[in-house]
Image (cartoon, rainbow, N blue to C red; front, side):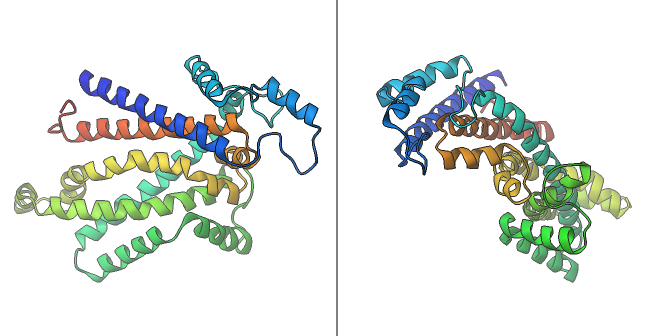
Length: 306
């Protein structure tokens, strides 16, 4: 186990190093800069600003300086939010994106797992085909389409929920549904496929031969054995819910990290772009590691050290 964690830790550091390096040089290769604007800026003022933030130095020097600051967990100041650091901006916005991801994950699991298990129990019937057809529609329907549709129908026409901002707990419903339904479709298909394999195992036939109720065979004996593929998917899926929430945050006007990432990219705010990319990359690596550990817990035959 320790060898596995050390190996994954070294791989994570290598991945983060590559992400940081590629993002650092890519964002600076884009035309424009953090102090470019529609209004003409005095060359003297622009030079002073660049000198204050170290942008007048050679690119190589900026890169190694940034890496040195990262070792001290210093993301630097933002270029567009005067008097605020990148850590302060991320610290205020990330909990909102994290909460949205947790709500969306709960929605995806609450919808996807029961539908997949029920479809597997009705394999070959019309119910099975209908549920899997609905899941395929959910997979093909992108969140930037589903979000406005839900906002228009449920929010504006039916007037059940607010469609913009976060003022009370019910305001999380529409964005969580938008993200959750998309991933629930994947979970439903994974659960169904895994359950079909499990239901053909000998111990399931033995349990049925002993006269156990069908519900107990399905939910107690079959579902747990069918969960490892779903758990393996949950790590990347949860990271995708947070990183992919930037579209949802834009649609529903949620002040999360995705909003800052979009505005930082638009404003060429180098340090804020780097900070959000590092947070997203770290989250993806950690969620994949957590998924591996959960898989080993559900299936003791999995050897993490191999």
